[in-house]
Image (cartoon, rainbow, N blue to C red; front, side, top):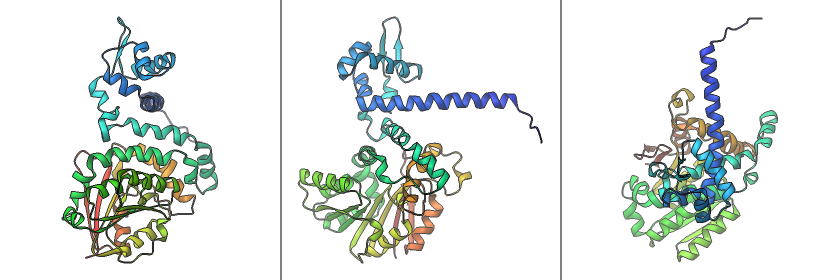
Length: 357
């Protein structure tokens, strides 16, 4: 047996890295609690305050607030004045932690960690036996996705995302048919339907809950041009039915993405456009080593996106399927023009604008 020598400095450095991972993981759970209880929003709105004042203003138990604050202080998130026993959330930190930050609020993402932890036992079983953890086991996943994506939709869909497609605003103003594939709770459809009353909007999703939420929001907003249908998008069989089809962070989750993309291509009218917003990454691991979100995205893939596909005997593309595979699958589906664009400041998404010229 060959005995490997150990680089003691490297071993100590990695032990330090592991301590950082443990602290970071626990702080992520505390951050989720801070978001869900409104503690970050409260502290950001107050002058330096005691735990009693913060708890009272937030409407939470002071003892829990004080212990949570201790985690935030030692984690470098909240500042503490020991002489006055007061806490302060610096505005530079609030810019990434409060609801007022809109799509820059990273605290929303931390909520997924506790959710994924709930399926760890089943995921371990899938590691050993194959298959996957079904979507239904992820409880509030769609609700959390709606919260996260809703922030981005409200901030960027009309003013940033749609203008990436040349001439689409004018066509929407005149009136065209639009389909959103994997629409979730349908907020993107309703935002577009309100902005473009002459166009007709349809959302497909396999979730009864999501479709009900989309229809309810459309009714509340008074949108007769928006409708939502419960549908497995792999069964779309419409031909030349839509002028614009969108898919927001939905294709890589599909059990049969190849079939879905072909159906989308077939459902476009001549001159139609498919906008696919998906994760910005390479299909090659070695080209993602410097990706700032790569560890998180590969983890999310393992614990949700890949496994829900494999649970249906699907392709299991995973979150990080990447540009090379995306282009290949889009081309195989029948798209002859594929233009991938990026938005400044958005490190998460790639915007594929596809047509059949």
